[in-house]
View 1 (tube, rainbow, N blue to C red):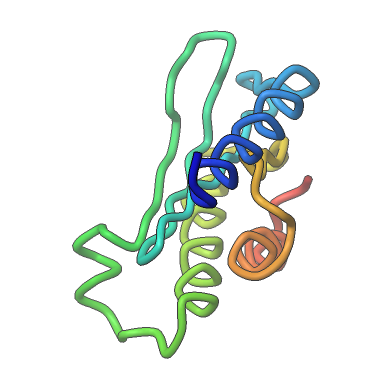
View 2 (view 1 turned 30 degrees about the vertical axis):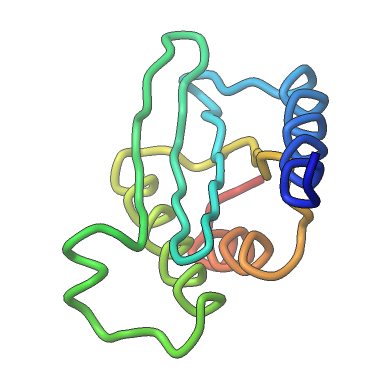
Length: 122
């Protein structure tokens, strides 16, 4: 087992442990974050219905055609603001944050902090 396999296995183990404790509802959906080497994705999920309510990512045409961020952290901040604005437009005020097994720093922290700035409660 290589170093990357071990790293991914540990993240999935943390993810499983976190997901046993949190769940999204229609009143308070789950804000989940996925980060790859280049991009970051955020979704609001209602686990009771098994539906994705809102999503935002750096691969969207709207984000790609806009001003290019200097770093991946700035891109994560933009995605946090975008998902929060979309949530507010759909009447969602509060969410449950799911860091998806990632450590709460860097891009994950930047996304959540910028979503809180817009007014999302979690």
